[in-house]
Length: 462
Ligand code: 0X9
Ligand code: ZN
Image (cartoon, rainbow, N blue to C red):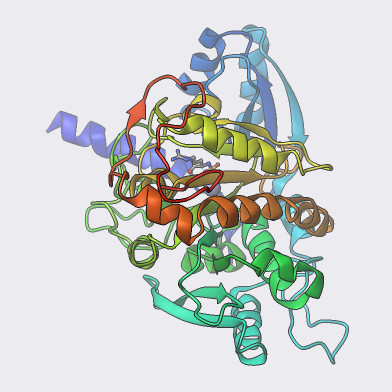
């Protein structure tokens, strides 16, 4: 009985620690600060993790390396106490955001505004963040306006019954038969830059004639908002919401981390069993209608899709599988080389490239690992800007620069997929491919074990 009461009390502490004050049903982050804390050692890092609950801290980033700075959200009531505690332990920090609510308000100034040009075909731009309705109207407009190039498909419905949309861009006379690239965004609700970049990519591929070459040999499937319920919730109620909005049968806490809910190594490291945690894995793999619909659609196209790209924020990382543990797929060096080639296109924002679990932390149930596991050779998570100066509250003035900096990398991906994963190349590779890729714990030097017998392709995509 005592242990049950203790468990309930502990759970309450945990829940309250995650909730900022509510005003008119909207969560307020007035006075919350983002601190960059600089541990001097692994001991310091562990110390901060140990006092996390006591000071009601929320970690916005986690890094494996002891000396990497930790971005920590500190509620007003903990600031003085934490300041003394850190001083006592000789751990330094800087206040990066002095009032999170101000940063949130600044970010939302343009949200939902009607465009200044009333003759514009759609209410979408990349100088402000947009509500879901603007994004969906934009996709619908493109579908109607460019029927030969664009096809909008509803692949399912979210927990709160919002449509889940994928846009295909293909100038092929028989779309769906060529190698394809999948791009998604909006897994994590608060990472607003992600749907912004995904929609920018759509606009550039569809409406800019100079970019037609990117679709010359490749089809594109783009899903800008995988988690529309969460995304809307960040606009209406809690700007810092991350998960889906599903109701739990065992807890009053809502939502599942969609990036811990995919069915490869589901429930492993870095995936919580607590429904109140930000990294809750869900009651079972693909418990969420959003992850189920997305995975079903991708599985149905898995012989066509050769590259899986999922856009997150923040940190400026190009992450190569696997992420469930420090484990490298057998073709890791090929994946790494392509990520490096893509990242070399970035000018304004430099990205760190490497293995996901190595650079960040082990986190199982991610969509990138799952995509790799079903045989999509090239699978990446990109953590978009910034590196923590603004974190999730990246100002609207940064949207276009981030998008413009990112877009040229797609040329590298499209070229690789078109030259290595074309029909001739895959025919040869398929017979040698197993459904579950081999893994290794150490990256191997680049070697090609695939024998090409019938083609002279420079590379394969098996
Ligand atoms: O933790 C995540 O889901 C991603 N980072 S984020 O800050 N956007 O939440 C990283 C996912 C990397 N991939 C895997 N661990 N599989
Ligand atoms: Zn994310």
